Each structure stands twice: as C-alpha cells, then as structure tokens.
Image 1 (cartoon, rainbow, N blue to C red):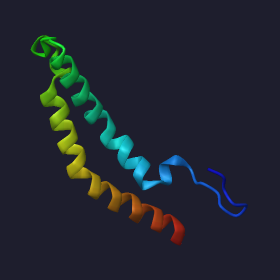
Image 2 (image 1 turned 180 degrees about the vertical axis):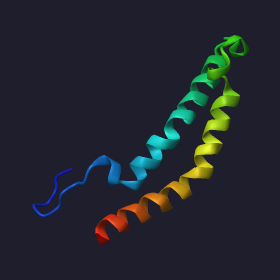
Image 3 (image 1 turned 90 degrees about the vertical axis):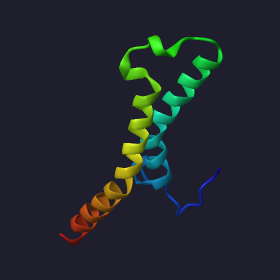
Length: 84
C-alpha cells in the first residue's frame, strides 16, 4: 500500500490494534498450540506446569482485565508529557 507524501506511519507501538494484538497474542497462541497438540494425540497433562492450558487461560484473563487500566495509565502519562 502506497502512502501519500504527507502521510507517515508512526512506530508500531503507537497503533492500538498492534498493541492489543501483541499483548493478547502470546496466551492465544499458547492455547492454540496446546489444542493442536491435544488433537494430534499428545498427552499435554505430562507437560510442565508453565506450559499447560490453565496457565495460558489465567494469563489471557489477567491481561484482558488489566488492558483497559493500562491504556488509561499510558494515555494519562502521554498527556502529561505533552503538557510539559
């Protein structure tokens, strides 16, 4: 996709969609991998605790709960930086 002369893309961390995808992506990918391994017949209950499905579920729910709070804190910080 070509950009017009005046249009410049900012850094990836300023795009809200990219940030949410990066933050939520790891637990989702982990759950998908655990699901695929289970479907092909691998016993995932033998895995160490840190790569079990319940850890990924707890991680995604914790991230979903703290995501709005993080956005408010980051936005407030950026506004305070602009005011100075």
